[in-house]
Length: 75
Image (tube, rainbow, N blue to C red; front, side):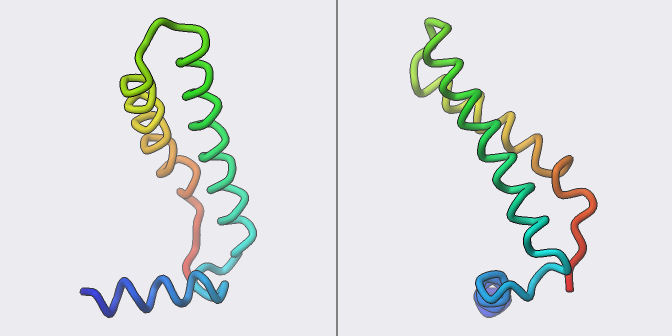
């Protein structure tokens, strides 16, 4: 199991894990941006604590990942 994870990480860092590496980077950046923007908005414009805001933003970001990566093809 560890070898599979290590091999996948090596291929990712070499840019050979996905057919369209820059498409993966773009979709991951979009997800990170939406999550960060939601975290900032929740902490600035609501009375929620940072922990609750981070939990909600992390949940929403996690829900978005399958939608963002649905057309992702492995090499």
